Image 1 (cartoon, rainbow, N blue to C red):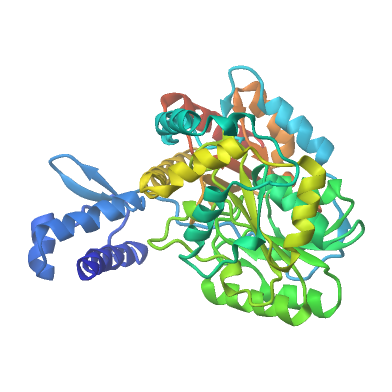
Image 2 (spheres, rainbow, N blue to C red):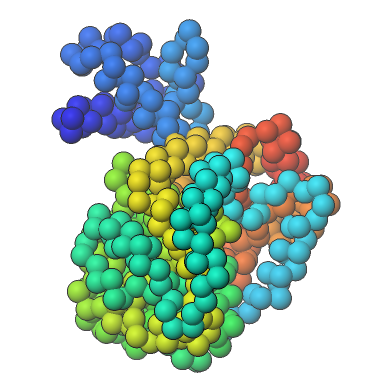
Length: 473
């Protein structure tokens, strides 16, 4: 079975490389299924598996009675690593601006391309309804269970531990269950740093992480970040040797907003640096399960031998945001995080922990992930095509390796924040790039949510937004 799998993946990768090198240009028809089977001396079913895989990756389109054609894609990446030298650590000040943008984005009848939540139709809502009912019937006592000390439900801990076996050995005693991944990250920051300390972050990074750093009175040091490989470890090492950093806060798998995944060799080097300088890393892995590579990328935690990595995650992006169940694999900080959790909010719902554990125990979750990844790749490709067609020709787009957001670099004279008001008035919501930087960088960038099913209304919204960008030149 594994040999057969390798065979069709090999063909998909071979054809994909030909597309990348433009042997097959956008719009070109690929050789027929029968021709490929004869040429490669493989079965027709293997060729069809390879082409379906390429379709899932957003590389080709299937046209009935015509064959497979190379998608029209914008292959360019934004050059987000624009700072070659580290700036001074700075206190963050985005909260007021962010609240204003979020409020404007909730305007009635808006096309919501700002909020990065998965849409209902690709979440397992009906399956979760059945699971909730089953758990309520089987364990009704969980509906009234409250505890300030016993914060974890046993089966949920077992399921988290089992899933971690894919990348390493996990001590269940380092798991702390939280109210969402956001609470997990906040607790970890409080455990590893103090007000006034400096946290190394990616540039760009998710604005909620900046919010947390600001609310805790800490400083942020932006590390130049490549849109494909993640933060510059050379720059981070310079900062560590200079004693500028007390902790790191990174999203190595499917960074929001870039969608980049840190290569495995970089993760190993990062874990080594953390050990050498005894610096903790708060690792946000909430998008790890939604990366598009054939194999789920390992977290930095997999390479940690010193207990310095605190991995934070949840199942909110792939199962249900409403459960508000997250967790931390807290390493050597488990006791401190557990204490902070107990003092801050007591126990996380045992009932919803049991519901998620029930869902995770069978094959439903892996099936859900395969469905979501395939859908999100296609929706990102569709959004990329529309942006490339509607925006000025010199705009550049990210090529996300996971998640469901698109990072768009506009010409330097376009101010994403100034453009936001006219866009809202025209019925389109997005997130301005300034919100993803502690120092207000990325003024000519914006982030779009690609998770929604493609509709004429979204297509028209992208067209209107592209017109506004052109008018701003």
